[in-house]
Length: 404
Image 1 (spheres, rainbow, N blue to C red):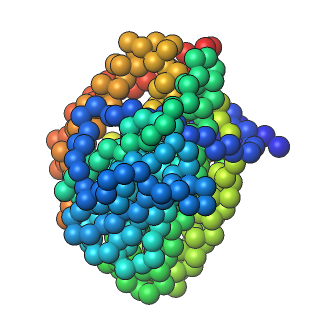
Image 2: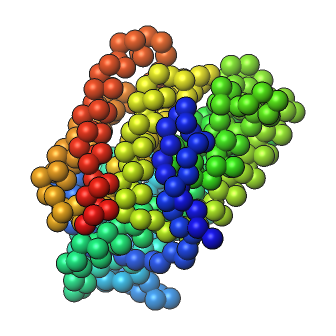
Image 3: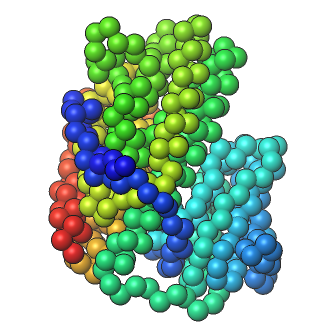
């Protein structure tokens, strides 16, 4: 059985399905290079290389206060397991391993006092970055020792490697979404409106980063992410947004809210099942990257996506992050195909990322300013211009990778 999704715009959100095949997922490691401008600070890492146990090098990461510390800052080439414990860091909850902006492995929602979380990645020789958002030193170099596997010189091999890596990224986001929606459901079943608001804002980015893939499941996506205007007369409105209305607009949690939350948990579990094992074509990553920016321009920029919570900037940022990840997984091949275009897109992403960082607000739900009418009026033109400047070159890559 083959499913063919393509990123869809709001307004025709449930109209067209083209392009992804269901299949088995291969596990592949990615060679790393130090990312430009990363803070290569030192945590309290021990000297020497991480020991190998059960076939994988073992690295322990501890979140404490504002610090993110590895017990070893290097490992031999091959599988590496990062085990993360949050001892007492209220402001830290996420750890990522990155290579040139690509997220190779991550764990989020790492709450103080809970059992350790872990992820395993297969790495070749080179320098990577352990990223701990919010830590005093956010980015720390992690060195993998040993002969690096020769990078494929064939563009098709590079593209294939990128699609596999992106598939792993999607699976990771779906797994985190399951956990985040479970936390939302816990707050709702307890009748805790304030906790539900925080959990809602924390859950939304995981869905928004992989929205082009989620939208490929035409029967499920409306159940999860439809706004009231998307719902046909006589059809029940379900998913995130009626819950959003209850907790942010009405300010009450009813039996109906609890039932909606229970259904959302079930639907997100189904989404995780459906996204596990998907394979992708390179042009689908390219189209998805562009489609996420179209999503920003067609709905986030107007404020219609989060009509009750006004956390549109949280979704906005997540869409850009998802777009950038799709691009980054294509980047090794694109650098060979058209280095000038690739450099231009990278520069535009850096510009948009810097602009979005100016809207951070630790006191607001989701960590970004509320996108109220005043902010929309003053800043929508500036945001639109920045996204359009990025999308113009980004829109060119789908044809390039499809014809490479």
